[in-house]
Image 1 (cartoon, helix red, strand yellow):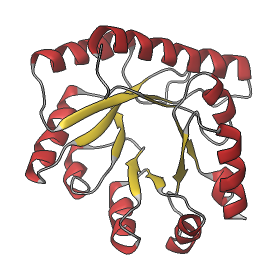
Image 2: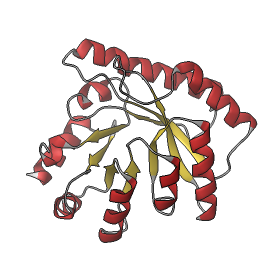
Image 3: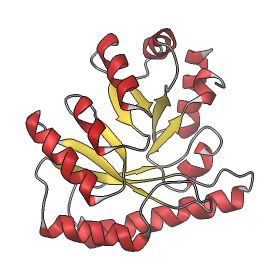
Image 4: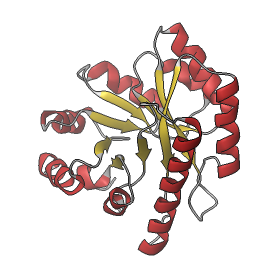
Length: 219
């Protein structure tokens, strides 16, 4: 089933986006099954769980940290994490930069933007995002690579609302690229779309979709 699910999603998103298999709370056996089906990008919500799985699984897996990140946990994954989706402050970027330097590497990051109509989601608003990028321009962090933006749509059946939220993130991405990353090859990714809304997300410009239950089944 897992192999068939991965194949189906990859056909739906085509060349437009890459699939991140959200494997939080899933046992190693299921991740191995996805790996055997060709899946190489995995997303985890908790640093310790990701580090434990990294120890046990093949080393060509690219691990994505997609959950809310506390600065005191960065050190546990700084040696291997491929992309952090959930950066929502300059302070957190400074910690990631410091831990990346200790590991003699650059860490790829996405800036998380608050696009939903709910109160429960983390992320920067437009003003805070621009302020953070301005600070970064004036105080560069050499061990950080800003790859793009991430956002989570409202948890709703209203597809028009979801589409508007994704559209707003794409517009913000374009604005950031035109203002701070002109001529740069690094700022290319928009992480948006989950099991219930990834097809809309891809239509609105997503390059990374974070899909769990549509691959592994409901928790």
